[in-house]
Each structure stands twice: as C-alpha cells, then as structure tokens.
Image 1 (cartoon, helix red, strand yellow):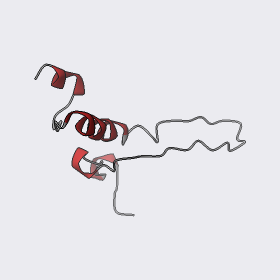
Image 2 (cartoon, rainbow, N blue to C red):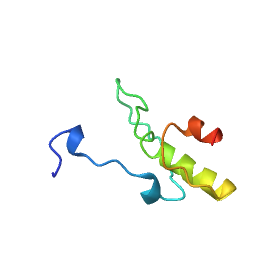
Image 3 (cartoon, rainbow, N blue to C red):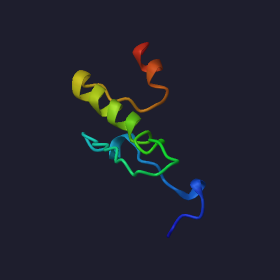
Image 4 (cartoon, helix red, strand yellow):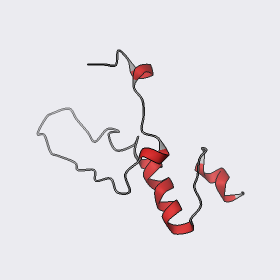
Length: 70
C-alpha cells in the first residue's frame, strides 16, 4: 500500500483517461450493499475525451459546462 489516505491518492487526469471505460455491477448477495461510486472518478475524463473525439477541442478545466461558453 502506497497511499495513507485520500489526499495521497492521485486521481486519473483527463489526458491519462482511456478512450473507453467499462463498469460492471456484480450481485454479491450481501444484505447491505449497493452500487456506490466506483465508476464516478473516471466518468469526467471519459466524457472529456468523448467531447474531444466529437469536436476536436480539448477540455482542460472543470466544470465542463463552462466550456460551452468558450
């Protein structure tokens, strides 16, 4: 283990995101559970790459909605 807490964990950046991300939900049979947020961190970089593929414009800042004005 390298990280001691969330502040040590480096999230994926837009430029490092793969062009496609597959998220699979697995039924565990546990009494307590849920989908949670495992697919959330790569969602924004994946969307930014999809927008680049569609428009040719790289988005380098967040929030994404502000880029529509530029």
